[in-house]
Amino acid sequence: MRYTEIEKLSDLELGESLKVEKDTLTKLKFAHAISPIENPMKISTSRKLVAKLSTEISKRLNK
Image (tube, rainbow, N blue to C red; front, side, top):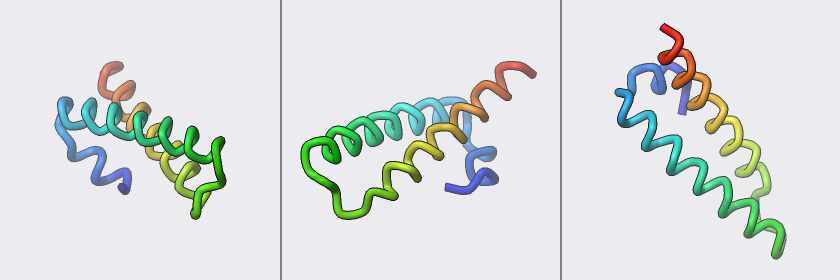
């Protein structure tokens, strides 16, 4: 998801997306710890998306 798409999301959609992506990241990390996943770059991509969503939420709270 690009940052321009994230900016267009409503506050509720942003919160829901963050929750879903954090769950996905946790599942990916857990699966990778048990046995190597097919594409480990998914973990990095997911972590970056969580950071983008968190940044947008904190940006909106500070305005």
